[in-house]
Length: 306
Image (cartoon, rainbow, N blue to C red; front, side, top):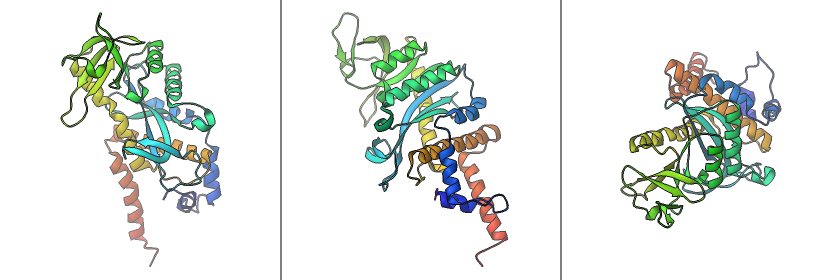
């Protein structure tokens, strides 16, 4: 269990005499920004290459009644609205590496910022840090006109999914919903209302509704689109990894600053696992089990309960 009391019990007495209050103070002392994360992530990225992926996830808190930051959010995992903390993450990848470089905790009640505001803030910060990605990848939730134009102002390219009711037109025709457009397998050039010319693709699934993908890279072919779609799933791998191996959902502290500190340290812990994967070929699972095995081996050597 990721509690302050349990963390205090895990600190060897030979090193420091720790109480649960000192662990809680550690969480609250974390700076209210993501600079520490960036300093650790920076050596793992190539800012002039690769891709930036942006998406959000909900940290499940189904039994929380007094934890700050907890509210109701849509969960892709549960396919319904659940109680939790929503975190918007910016990830860098070259197709192999999975490196979170920035994140924001969604708390509109106090900072009055929407997810789209966080989207633009993180891209602005990435620009200031010298990123020049091949493409920015994001889901249909973030494909609003303001965000598409913002990516263009940064002089970057995008690939995103569009909702089926977005209006486009071909040459002199009237505007139609993308679901009503006859889109060939190789895609087609259309005018997106309010934005300009884009290339539109349709992906038909057997038992699901079709997906509509859009990019401002007008020369993109279906093979490249499929490749980038696969790359965009790296952020889902990150969400799974940071929840399964780094305990990001399991903090029980009530104060928002403590929750933020725990989220920050969890993502920094993920970077340790990812660095080991890239440099040593050790999977996240193997890294986590290595910690457990050492503890079990120590107990077998000295069974303190008997």
